[in-house]
Length: 250
Image 1 (cartoon, rainbow, N blue to C red):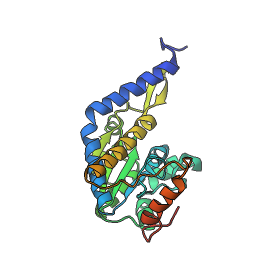
Image 2 (tube, one colour):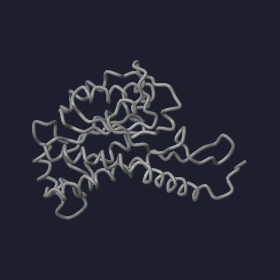
Image 3 (cartoon, helix red, strand yellow):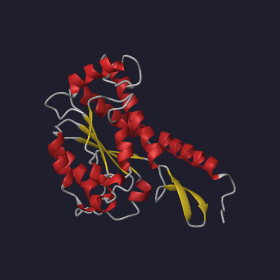
């Protein structure tokens, strides 16, 4: 029997609003810091890189090749590390060296900025990605759930967690286990990591665009493919930033 006094569909909105407000109040300085390092990277010709495993890939993809995002962006996401593979939970815990392989393939460079998304921040592929990124001279930004991460043990051989390795840490202010709504006894729903994580991603990108304009530089922001004339705009940016020796084209 449900113990929730209000309608669950309404309560979900309240939980998301509440979590977003916590992020706005407590994490804005780190969001600005992340935006500043990405701004500097964009101006000197570097890329924004994103990475995540499991459902965190959905958040990492928010910054990649969609309307309103920075065209000089790449993602290290591999289909085998997404929920679509059916084996991602086991794979991500054990493929510590996979991050190195992915970085080699995508030709990441010193001076790039990587946003690594992981609610728990404990799995090997995630922690290894942060360690490898720093070895290669990238700035590592963690988007994680500190409440959860601090309560569980790392699965990486070093014993480190993502927030302990990253240069900048942004807390998504989620609860332990991510599910924010207790609908009934031992029945919890409404994970907030995706909704809040996506908002954080777009807050960073938007601030980067504003920062660049303030410095007199036009930000390389893509347009929706469904807007007339966007093909010409996007093609020009793709040719300038993507169809190069940097990496394989889309």
